[in-house]
Image (cartoon, rainbow, N blue to C red):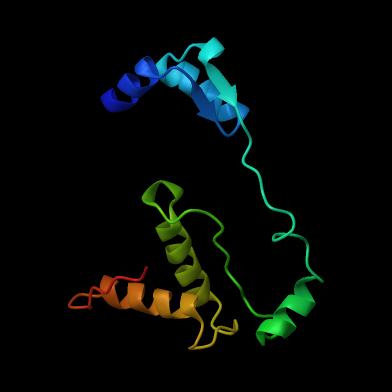
Length: 128
């Protein structure tokens, strides 16, 4: 945390995505409120917009209407915790043997690889 204190202390301006993040900069690192701004992340609505609904998306992707489809929307980095999602999905699949997940599904491959790596003598393969 010393590095974070140095960055906060020497920055001319601090940008946070949310009011909560700005408050954390102030309370955890002593950031001055006058040097802290909130700038919400934007999205290109020409590219990202509501589609035709879940059923249409599943049909377009060739997924069963009742398929279990995990989603991770975020930057792949340890801070975001995608490994937690992978473990949670693996546990859900373990508990719900009847859920639909094809062998060609990338998430299914990741979950299988993680399960294999977790076993004694399992292979350590990087999925990125």
